[in-house]
Length: 472
Image (cartoon, rainbow, N blue to C red; front, side, top):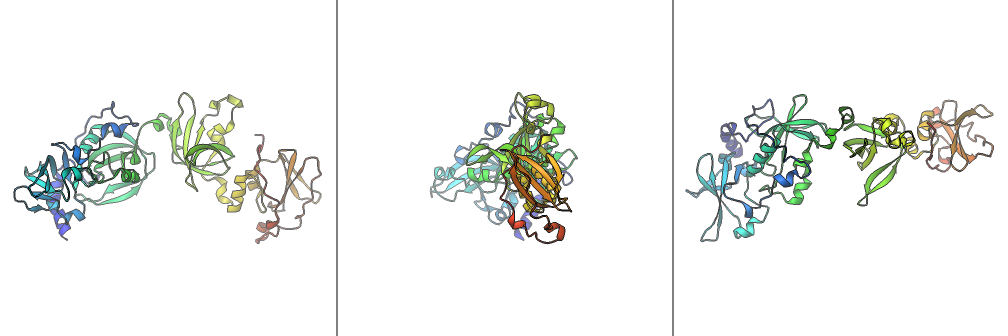
């Protein structure tokens, strides 16, 4: 209740503070638009060039901070009035700007971190909890409640009206006109947005960036920039990647140099129609690996390859979340080597949109399809997905349908189907041998009779994936 009363007492003052910004529909923006300097906004070194970390040992007089207490801070005071020596409630000082004035060592060994307040002109101090100034200033403790305004001002200078891409899906929308209430929302990753306002967030994540999408919807993220007085250790800063600038936003770089029809594939789910070679991180190294057919991916990034018509797809496998990379073209005529080049380089040939027909198959059949083999009770469609088109479709002496596949090393694979189109048997033979008889001709499959096939456990040993599935 005390915290609530302290919060209510400061809301009127906060309304006129240009560092307090809200998403559209809650409060009109009062921040001044700053001209963006395109010379400095290089995404590769943006943070290092523009947002230096200052430990307290490096603070200079005149550095500006804002008092942004959280709920706990409203009950535990941070500052003393320099004249009366009495504690001042953080609720009273909420959203006031404190200007650093150095430190002083008292005769009793205490250390005071000194400030003047821009809003009331008074002097305040924070009493250091332990040790000498030199011992304390190198810690990550800093001064509680203070959000560094240097980061906010620099972000305004560089980012106002800047177009960005979203890098996470979790953002917030303000729900209170005078308070800090919000609700979390989910947006599309790699969405094009524009920075509309920048203000103060929290002590740990002091830069509140409000962006707007192409439909006029606004949302925000509180992010850490330099970590100055944030209380975040460097490892903790990167662990909280959603709340770092790079974890939330990306400059319009490689992804935006592609045409709009190519960008439409960002965040789409696709599946491989054929076995393909891709790159993936494993054991600390990027290696080339064979990816089975019907592997599902979410496309996270599309990056042009310099001096070529290729694009690098950065994709997450939908099941394992493992990251893969594949260079593709979106126009079949752009394949390196022309008509004789690898067809799997063409996006439209290798990938199908969505989960594909795999979602209608059983787990066992899907696994077999990915490995290029046939198991009992597969449908004709599933066999085609696993092996491609047969080179011949025929019937045995008893009228049973048989599909023939050419395998490597002069081997033929015979696949039998029952009258309802389900696999009853698959056997390999030498091309010079006569076709074997269907030993399971009189056994109806599990799917056709609604039960478990008696031949399920007596399948021939798994067959290795075809190296050349069909001639198309």
